[in-house]
Image (cartoon, rainbow, N blue to C red):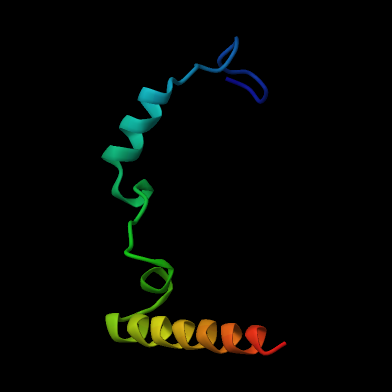
Length: 69
């Protein structure tokens, strides 16, 4: 077939079930699940724990600052 020649007609339609089957069957397409944002972005569980502690501290500081105007 020459350039510009090929299958004629509209592209095939995929149902949401077809797409879900592909995602389930291809590991690289499966979304990862994490306990929280820090677990998702950290390289180690220790680093995630450190980020969680720092976040909690910053929230506490922000609350104190806000309450004292």
